[in-house]
Length: 432
View: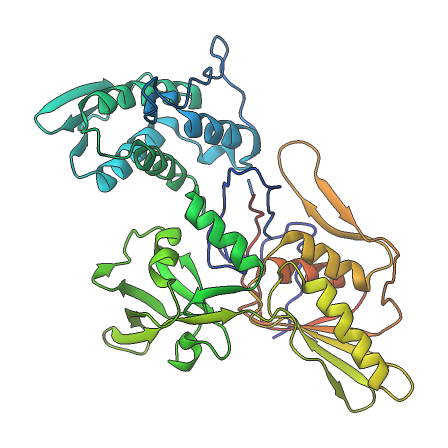
């Protein structure tokens, strides 16, 4: 079946749910670090209510050097980011966010219990034998939610034992807030952020499996060729129902990634449910050093037709693509007469690389339009070493997602070539 991907116009793929898939197996990222934000191929603004201003940032640490939970250092940043960047404002429900934040804290810290009243007008938070009730009816905006969360944090800071890391509480609360928006938005702890950056460099320790949350299930999108996951026989659309002794029901994607990754040579046990199987099956996999080859070795087909496969979009993809194209050109008798670019099972990756790869083949035209509140951000092709003379076809399938859909859409929308294959994954957002 042939499907044309109209990504630049942001069209949905015949009503299918927009899901997340990255070149690294992580969900939508709200990363805070000193580095330039990484964009993966989103999310625009809400105004603060009249009479309320953004909470003034407090000191991160107490005078004795301990972490200040009530400073709301990360909470304030996340709220501002949601306010200015989350595009679907109808999903923002501050009271539900506050409840979800405390439910997440309850799961993170054994000493904490949180109960919402039957009429949903208040919430009781308990630490050991001490409890306090907080009114919820007044929480009608993001800022009011922030103020109320500060009250709760003051209570927790006072009653919880000193050995409990306050940073863990704040991260848990923030990810509870984000879980109400979509299945993909998470705040990465620094360790996972470092893993994400490592993955875009193309090497990490793990199973070699791309996963996503689909229909509330931890789903295999594509095993990487030659990796432990591929060798064990895992397939696209398999559901991982357990990792070790823990069920994946309600497990955040970043948590699943953390459990599946690890030093090469170590083992992890997973239970996999496949549609044809009456019950889940057990797999014991040995982690390996996963080296992700972005562009596989190019082949020269009959008639001087070039074939090149792009497996994902990482930091060196465009550079490697141009090297492979130069090799094909040198091996052909009279120069290349056509080109096949294979994006099947390509889960995506860095947005800048999707734009750069598209620009290799385009002389002019829109590559991608990132739509949010306000004016769209439009990326256009520039004539510079472009391979615009080659007839070309792009191959896609159900595992083609994100950045690969951007490339396919750019080629199709600019009448640069044809797109052949199956309906693609349908991922329509950009993460920062």
